Image (cartoon, rainbow over all chains, first blue to last red; front, side):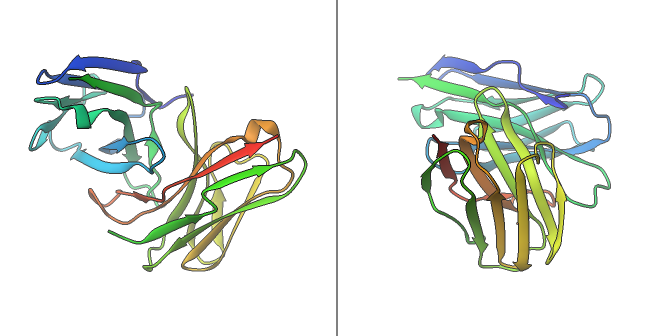
Amino acid sequence: DQQVKQNSPSLSVQEGRISILNCDYTNSMFDYFLWYKKYPAEGPTFLISISSIKDKNEDGRFTVFLNKSAKHLSLHIVPSQPGDSAVYFCAASEKGGATNKLIFGTGTLLAVQP
Amino acid sequence: DAGITQSPRHKVTETGTPVTLRCHQTENHRYMYWYRQDPGHGLRLIHYSYGVKDTDKGEVSDGYSVSRSKTEDFLLTLESATSSQTSVYFCAINSGVGGPYGYTFGSGTRLTVV
């Protein structure tokens, strides 16, 4: 059972426009969420995170929104740049988890067109 | 960033042969993880370790074993490789990058079983 879901396998946007990547989760015990970015032939790298006590976290062009009642989070990239083209993974961690395991979604491939 | 390296970067092996992938970290992070990345499945946890000689199974552990005899090294072994184990394998450490649950990933090992 997929606890973290990214229902859009791919997304294409024009340079300068907003990119919105979505993530849904089913486990109400998740209390910390992260987004990772992955380029081909490289490992994923941390992008931005949010705790369940917040509903928004912003870092430069990247903003993550968390809607706990809907069990939904989204990553906004404004403005989008060609260098943002990558696979984006949403991840979640369970409150009180002793192993600090992250559960990842299936990923969304973002293509930013010049 | 925490230093984490994986070896080999690429491996082609025959069905039925044993294969060992290595993950090495240069800092004393307690938690280490092995994930595999496959199209449509995202990153799935194979095994993880919470200390020397302390390991446990993840969601896709069948056909894999791990060992951690030193803090810095976490080995993943495919006892008898099968074509379904063709994948990209990532090691991660709970480095705290991005928060208490944040990971730093290695660059990955692309394994092909023929």
